[in-house]
Length: 506
Image (cartoon, rainbow, N blue to C red; front, top):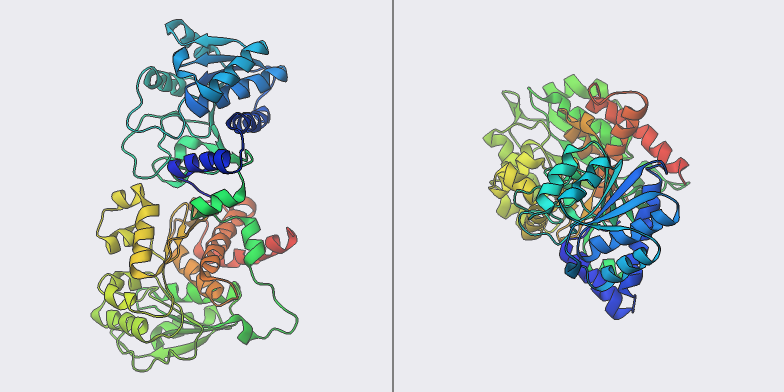
C-alpha cells in the first residue's frame, strides 16, 4: 500500500486524467460509491444521516455518497457548507445528478445547524487534503459543533482541518470516529499529533493505476501480503549456514539482559548461528537463558568492555552492537572499531547510537551496509533537534539522515518508519502500546539481525523484522496478555505464533 503527500495525490489524479484519459467525473463516482459502501457497513437504515459537503473533490464525493445512500433507501440529507458559486466542475455535475435523483441540498445558514444536532450519523466531506493554515468560517464553527455532538462521525478521505502532510502548524479539525481514505493514506495518518483525528480508518481504491503510484511516491505501508511475498522459505536441504552467522556485541554489569534478549530473538526468528560477545561476568549471567547460542568472552574493566583487539569480525554475515553496552569512552572505541573494520552489514542500537553521534564521519565512510534503530529520543540526538520537532516531520528527518550518511534508518514508534539510503520508506502498521517497555528494542534488533542475514533485500528484511516484532505483540495481546503485562521476553516467545499465522494464511 502506497503513502502519499497532498501534492503526490493531486499529481496522480492529474496524470490519470491526462495520460490514460480517466474522466474526473468517473473517478469522483468511483470514490463516492466506494466510500458509500463502507458507510453502509457501519450504519443502519434507521439512522438519520447528514452529509456536510464543501467545495472541490471532497464535496463532490459527498454528493455521490448521498446519492448512493439515497438509492439504497437511507434517510440522508446534504448540508452544503459553501455558496453555490464554489461548487464547480465535476462536483457541480454530481450535485446536479443527486438533485435529479430526488436528493435534498440544504444551503448553510444558522437554522441548518439543527441538521447537525439531529443527525445520528455525520459524514464529513467539507475540506479535503488541500487545506493550508487555519480553517475559516463557517468551517471552524461547524467543526466545533461536530466535535461537541454525540453523532457517529465519518470523514471522507481526511478529517476536515487535518493537514495531509507532516510539519503542519496547530490546527482545528474534526475528530472522526471512522475515516475512509481515498486512493492511498496520507502522511498525517502516521504522525503522533494527527493520527488520533482519523479514528478507525481504512483505504478504498478508486481505480488509479498502480504504475502512477510507483512513479510518484517512494513511500509505502508494509503489509502481511508483503511479508508473505518476501520472507524466504526454508528449503529441504538447508543447513544452519544457509541462514546466517551473526555476532551480537553488548551487555554491561548494569544491563546484561539486553544482550540476552537480542540473542534469543535472533535465533527464535530464524538465524542459523549466533555468537553473543560480552564480558565473562555478563555471559555467566545470561548463557543459561539461551543454550543454543555460543558466546565469546571479551576483556572488560569495571563491568564494561574495554578492548577490541580480541574480537574477530571476519567470519560473520552480520553484526549488531550497542544493546546494554554502556556509555564509557572504552565502549565508544569498540563501536568505532566495528564501524571501521566490519566487512558485513552492521546494526547499531541502544548505547551504540549514543556513541554514533561522535562517529558520523566513520559511518559515512563505510562501504558495507549500516543500519541504525533509534527511538525518537535517539534520533533527535543524532539530528540535533528536539523530539517535538522530529515527531512533526519524521518522514523528512529520517530520509535526510539516511541519504546523508548512507544508512538504513529504522525510526521506531507506533508506526515505525524504515528508510533506505536511497530515500525509499516503508511504514510498519503492527504493534501496540504493550511494546512500550524496556527490552522491546533489544528484541527488535535481534529479529532485524536475523532478517538481514536471510535472502531478501535489506529494506525488505528490516520491514519484515518490524512487522514480525509488532505482530507478535498483537497476537499476544489478542490471545494471552494485556498491553499492561506484556514483556519483551513474551514477544520473543510470540514469534512462534507469528510464523505459524503467516504460513497458515497462505
